[in-house]
Amino acid sequence: ERDPSVLLSACLLLRSIAALLDKPDIEKLSQRLIRAMNDHKEHEEFQLVAMDLISRMVHDEDSALIMGEIPGITCLISSMEHHANSRAIQEKGCGALATLISHDGQSLGCFAAEQGIDAVVAAAFKFQDSPSMYAAAAKCIFFFIV
Image 1 (cartoon, rainbow, N blue to C red):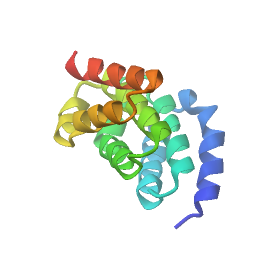
Image 2 (cartoon, one colour):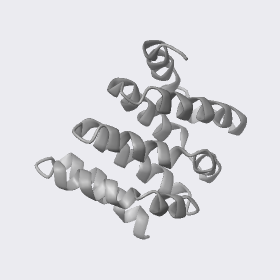
Image 3 (cartoon, helix red, strand yellow):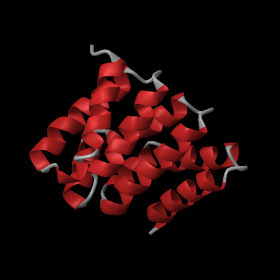
Image 4 (cartoon, rainbow, N blue to C red):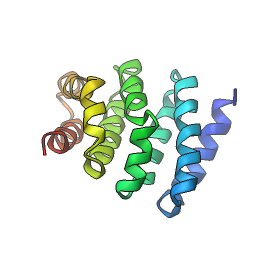
């Protein structure tokens, strides 16, 4: 098990090159990233950076499929549920979910099955005073129903 601060530093470095990664690199990184997110669910800062990295890695249908095959959507929803009182986690989670489902319609089944829509709506209501939270939730719901 790796120290979350080391993982955080690695994710911060990887964000700058995430869009340049090819399919084999995304597959390897996705598996490790999801495992690290599940192992360090309590580390809010790591979860935020990892969600941002997921959003940056998903740039086409292939990369979205990889994240759907590896339980990326389930991991994102789980992190949102674990950090239900964190507006930042809710916004990043909605943003990452929207990115995944906008690129890969097949992930929609997993998204619905994992109660993703419930997590998004709960976040929007919990942080209803935040326009940016509403925007992130609306974007996610838009891609869910399209």
